[in-house]
Image (cartoon, rainbow, N blue to C red; front, side):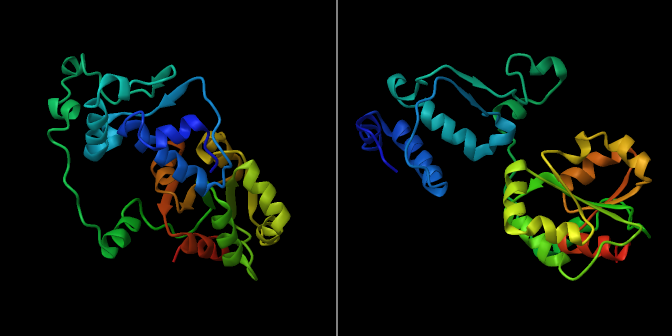
Length: 250
């Protein structure tokens, strides 16, 4: 990336190790996205909630806070995301002190392949039929769209099952150009852009289409969609495609 004199000075450490480390991280992100240079910003919104950051994130913030004030103060107006706890009022809700201090932060846990397989079989029962398969939440990336297209090549969605796929407008346009859209739609899938399944009148849409038994590769969606009248099941992407083609989850 092309850096101006001010950015070069920051990268060399003239403004302290905190800003030096922050710029290095931004450069890594910029190089990943083939950015040519930086642009100035007038304000910043950041997420710094202890529940989301975890112990290592809090340690990082404490290291920044320990620097001289001139090296760790923000340079533009900055606001934060809502926090998970009010440090002044959490006792009134009987929330635990360790939630505010991270004294009781959980220890690392090793996850084996068997644990992952057990997780897939944990939520809900395995339906005898599948009304709708949903690949969304989050919207699929280009690589995921290409993977789904490859799984559908030479196959067709079951006549009693719907396959709903959601992606972003930008990725949808790329899929159009690359022929991915045609491949998934020729197989009977419904490709939507710019939507999130559980925010698109999921209950009403399910009632209109007679959907009850839902299969998805999104643990987030499976957890949320139960409140909309569905009986969901979590599966891998390949299992989802098999379920859409066979009309049932093996």
